[in-house]
Image (tube, rainbow, N blue to C red; front, top):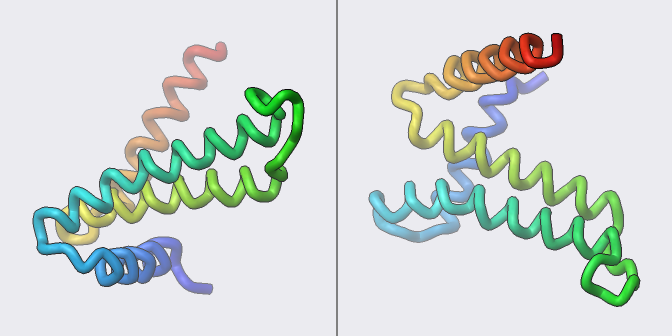
Length: 108
């Protein structure tokens, strides 16, 4: 099975190539893609719920789920890009542990 971060780096390479941008801009595009994908997920969710569409539902749950996954992947691609020496995995694990510990304390 291919490691998660190996897959993320492949996605990153594709996104960097597709951007066609120069180095400083390329990184900014990867970071801002997180927001773009998140906004698309929120818009699909709104349409899935029929909010602001006079009750018409014109998005499906699988579409919403896919767009949320796209936002998460964009975040991981951006994290990989800005993490020196392939340390994104360490950063992700550290922050996940932090969030988990905090949630556990708050839920107690």
